[in-house]
View 1: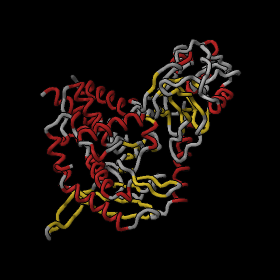
View 2 (view 1 turned 90 degrees about the vertical axis):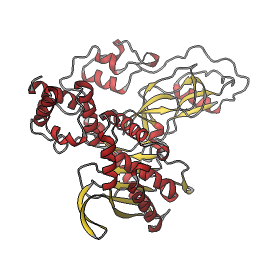
View 3 (view 1 turned 30 degrees about the horizontal axis):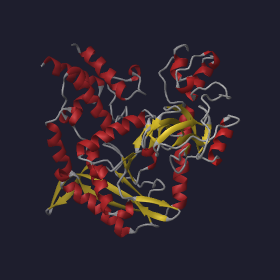
View 4 (view 1 turned 120 degrees about the vertical axis):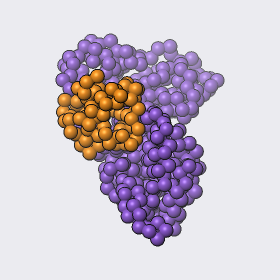
Length: 390
Length: 82
């Protein structure tokens, strides 16, 4: 039997609010299934489960703000007998009992659970109901367990004047989360930075020729080539790819490339593309599109929030020449890519206009030195000189 | 299709790509990247949406011709008439 707990979705996360259950007692779950939605400082995150079994009970109240590690549900392994029935089925007591209860020779579980808390409703539904002065008790909930969801309130609330926007308090929360992670990084990580100007004219020309024959849906962005080159470099230079924890640095086997996504209206989030070094350019482009769309809709998955092994932050097509980024703990490196600019450059002894981009690697001196950082940047440069091989 | 129709369709697809924008607040001369802060992924999504809706495939070399609603209205209108 396993207790499914509130996961930590980043170095800065202390608690989260359970918004939605996507499973019910009796459901089969397998590794990687999305079982719940938790609202964090960085938006609503879809929580995946990492064990297989049968949902025995849901042990946390919808709408409850719970610390990392708090029990959310009890999962029985296949063939496992259910635990003894709780005597007093309040949620906290039940969760505690499950953690200490013996698992063998247990009587069957109660068929129904007594719900002892108030009206189950999502935080968004509560907020909207409060704004519209609607009693939640009078609403028919369409969510799991009859929980009142935002759509149930919207059905009867007067239309809002403006389209839904991210509330400013959510923005303030995200700013706090970014500040907490970056303060920790600056406090704990002895950063050093190396920059390299890379001639990307060849890569840009190759891409223009490729895209010229393709409809918009099949075109690839220059940023995709940069990500692939970075992923390949990370696979070669292990000191840039992994996590630093209590036991020091542990290099990662896979390259899960974190991609810093700027949210319109402000804020930043860096979900990861798993095993990016093994993806073809069209597949990597598709993964980027999907990730950006879901990041902006605030609908990312828990594994994407925690699995990143190296983050890339790109200033985009237009912007500053270079950026020295701050590493996202527990990672040990961050690659910042400046906006490409047409610049005079010496090729074969002649000054010619070439498209250049400045790649700046921030690395962790606990793990690496300039030598490895140099190798990493040289590898990216080399990869971008033969774009057809990416 | 008139230029006004083209402009309306362009703005509709633009605010779908960037839902925080309000079509009423967008000026004819606003630059989609410099003023409205679309990034390269947004521009590609916009071009793909226009392709799907109007059947007009805008090559990368022509992206500068849809950089503002006024430019885009003239460009799309011309391409539709062609």
